[in-house]
Length: 275
Length: 164
Image 1: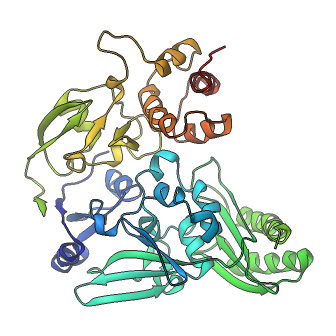
Image 2: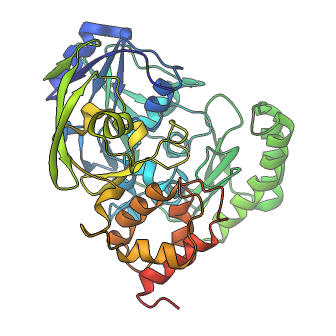
Image 3: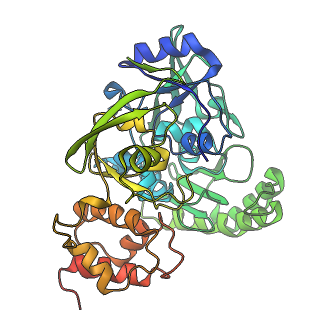
């Protein structure tokens, strides 16, 4: 199908972009890579009156190391971050998850911040951001706001972004160890995950576990490292607590079963990584 | 700042296969429709129109993207390359196209333009991919005829430089 009519605005700077968002408010949608939004426009699931195209804002096309964080600007594509030479060393979880995001062709245009903004509950980049305890940088004419991943991603396709705010960047904390594992189950490679599980060993004693596709947003918990048998119990209770949900791709019951099977295997894989 | 109101047909110009082209379009016109209906370049095919099937894949500034998830106005000032650019002016197929022919990498050919453009970009970045890497790129395309085996064989042959 074809999109409904909309006004098109292509600001030349971030200042102009936030001015346009202040002008139009919730009548506007921000277009970056468009790999979710354009499909929603074509299917007429989204019908904004104004499209604000930020894909050419060079000032948002950066990946930089700031303090102990990696800041990724809103114009950075998923493939650009995937090909960033320091990614595997500084953000091994993101390096492990990015190959599962869409396809080569969609990663060429889809942005890192766009995945965060879209907030699909089974999407890999929001899961990585939540698992690592990252944050989202929002700008409007009222000023700058930095929200932690759980404050930002509120629910199914729902975030704390105000209509006049632009996501200008996301920040991932640099990982202290390379001991981690990531797995997902999807019908076909590149599809949204039915479920996805990440496990990162933080130091000798603690581990962060992130689960996508089981609830309306990623679930993250910090647990003591206590062997694989204990991990099985953790995922049994997590499956009961999160419940899962039914959709076209899988039943809630299947999701719970997948989590109980795959969760402990991911923890085991992370534990096997050399310290 | 570029502003186009919803009913306004504005002039959009870009380079298509090395040649400057332009035409008028409303903001909502997709690049696929602009190429096919305004410019008349029908080599780019339209399948699902929501980014899944990969038929409409073209290069924008050398990078393989879905033309159906791109507005015509977004191509403004860019270099767009479509399947029409691959063969020589006299119609001689390029090496990738010849390999597709030799290894029966197409039957109906509907998906072929997109697949050729994806591998035009990918092989420029990674000239000697493994079969797994080829299949990873191919996962962004749907082909209902071939079962993909011929396509993988064709890309392997052309990237090894020695078809056998």
